[in-house]
Amino acid sequence: MKNKNKKGFTLIELLIVIAIIGILASIVLVSLNSARTKAKYASFEASVSSIKGVAVVCVDGGGAPSTAAAGAAICDDTAITDAVYPTLPIGCTSAGDFTVGGSGDDWTITQSCDATCSGVCSSTGCVYTGC
Image (tube, rainbow, N blue to C red; front, side, top):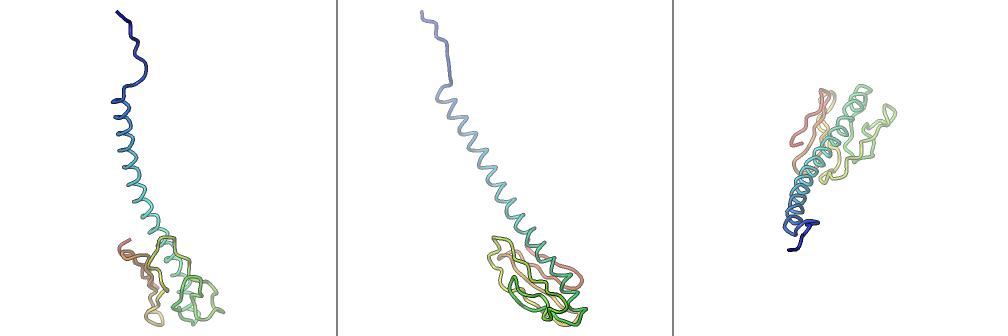
């Protein structure tokens, strides 16, 4: 009778471990995608929120917010403030011009990040939908 000392793992044991690792990896990847989307929306909200204060200064100084693309002046009178619209985060696919509505103290600035997330800022604050 031979004395067999078993060394190593069987093929079945290795396949089971590989399957478990695959399942755990897929769970992590799904969670990462969700976190990436939340981070994009948080960055969008921060960028759009930064406009409110500058627009208030612009209107209080006698100017008016202007409809323009990212990087262009927020105020139509750059002597009041020369601040520019922020660049939106990568992944904001629907980002066109920042659109201004209303006049005087009753103004709004609207921008979209994608088909579901958009923000509207006014002198009273910013409201986001779908983010």
